[in-house]
Image 1: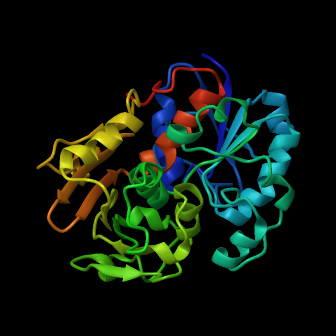
Image 2: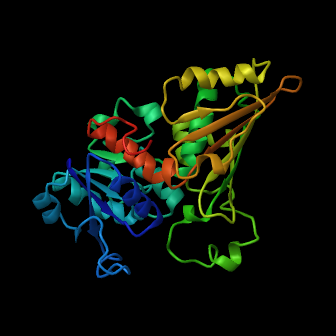
Length: 335
């Protein structure tokens, strides 16, 4: 059956997606670890089958021999649990924003709360496999990327690396997400009556995913404009990225940058010029779909990046990272 891996926060949307993926993974055994909000809940289905449920504590992790624990928890809970899981001998894949930044000041500035485990930031590996694959297998603590930054960085970083962006003109990222990206915790903003037949922008200029895009893409804050918007849908992210191109004369040239950078990448799909990805094409998959357009006369360029926020934007990418950490084929359980 393979090694045991734990899931904390399995009742949340990302955690439930982890359970779904790991139950069909042939080489690991998922174990549900009951933390504060999970504790005491029983299944609504009589005689329900599924992964075993155990207490979320270091003694259980050690006794059960869990080799890895997923934390599908809020950042403050991840900061509480990660040190204990590491001390118990398990490696940690954290799906929150707790360990994504290089210094605690960035976290405090954008999350408006102090970082309680700054000593772990130096060793945390950022888990975007397309860029940090060499570091992931040896990681003890892995910071799974955010959903918006995954779609943005996979589209933007190749452009910055290739030097084809007029950085003085900046990059605009118009990002739209399904409501599950806000998490399961109830709020007026994400209630049915507020969301249905509606479309709204939020966190203008202060979205906490902005510094994550800047850190990985290489852009400065003044070069990047990001707007997050809520779609009346359950899942999916589609980002339309606008910039002024330098040294490009055709969409084929622009597409060639991505073909070169992502050659052999199992979860990047590129669209031919004249075609664009959509949310239906990536739903319940670990793919990031990318399409491009270029107006050679004016230099206006556009890239569309689409992912499922719960899969490539959260649980699927976490399993992709787990596979790399455990020496398994990267696509296992995901294709």
